[in-house]
Length: 104
Image (tube, rainbow, N blue to C red):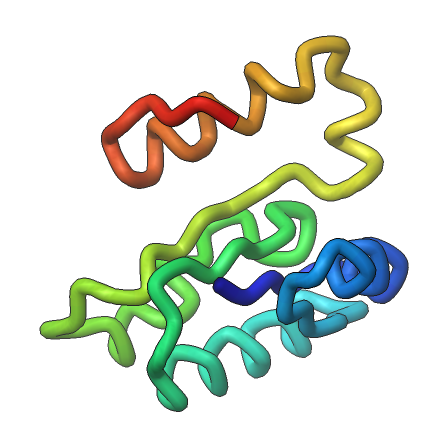
């Protein structure tokens, strides 16, 4: 699993033990995502939806014929903390992306 997020959130993900890549702009986020898809070896890449609201479209050409990685748009820190049910919000994002409800 890898995460692409703003620098502050990326640092938090790293502290939690995840591989995280920082991006300040949508262009940087797209470049990081392209690198990860081309590199391979990831089952899931979570992308801050404030940077890339539709990561599948950003790398549509690179994903042709590939099942992995699953690209998961996630709420950035600002969006997550403005939603009173953060866990429910994240569960719904995962369900919408992979089609299954998982216990977080």
